[in-house]
Image (cartoon, rainbow, N blue to C red; front, side, top):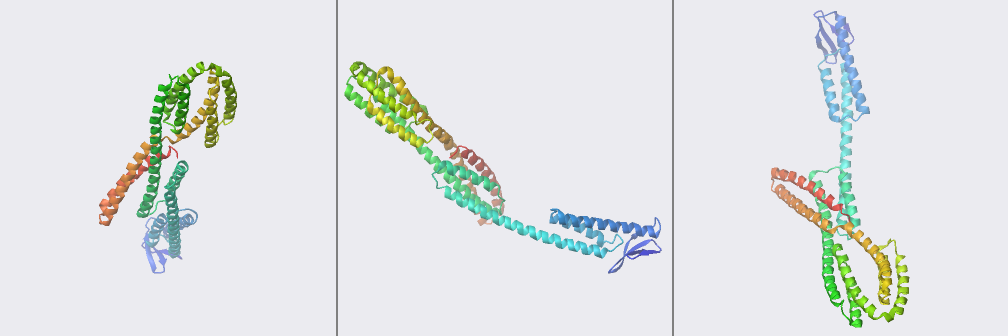
Length: 409
């Protein structure tokens, strides 16, 4: 028989380990000497020590999950409890107990951290919702639209909350965005209507201007043309595709009349030459407005210059194209700046995109209402089914809103 402080081998080859509860059978050894038997099971003990050392190190120095750590502890404890090694098994058990305490503590820390993170995410989303609801009433279409897009990106970067809370906050957030989009759509639809009204009004002005182009009642007709010009300016701008054509017809009709009048009143050349000098001064003043940096100020300044221009009267016929070309170039540059601002808004495309967004939002609102009704009725299965459909509709709504936002504010 052979033994050491932690175990022994009896005359039948049975190997025992000493524990606080007495000797426990480790196994049977028939292939060699008792010393070899003890050495074999002592090596198994040393292997357990190495595994526990490694696990302790992983728990201390890595982000090993509590679940994985507990699984490893349970595996090692089974080997210790089944007494398949010779050594201080009680100490190994205590080390495993200590590891369990560390893992439990880590689990609680992570649970608390997750709770804090969730609370912070909830507060952040509530702030996003509050800002979105405030922006929904804004008329700063571009600035508010850009800010809402930034809020969406921020929302996407935040963790999800529990489903009910997250859905409620998202519903408010999405509703605010949709409300803003609907108001913006209505605004630009109104602008479209105004431009259509302007087109119709200018069509009538053009028709009258063309009907007067052959008149020889110089004074009355010239006065009427001036009135038509004032009406033209008051009518506002038509759609881009109509504005230039209408203007060319309107201006062409006036040119026909005033050219005829100029031929009849050739003796007024001296006056017209003086007019040319004054218009050259105004053209130079207008040209100083370029390049356009402040559209509103440039438009107002040009309007004042143009009013003085119109008050001056005609210039010699051969000088008219050049001098009017200079003024028209300035006017065109201001109009181009206006068109650039208009193109950025792209109201027709926005209206189509906003219409789709509104339909999707209505579908989302309807599904949300059905889900709430199903939950109130205790029909969890139906609520879950509708919830999955709601997620799909929300994804489509997100895509539609993103497309809408690309049109700018």
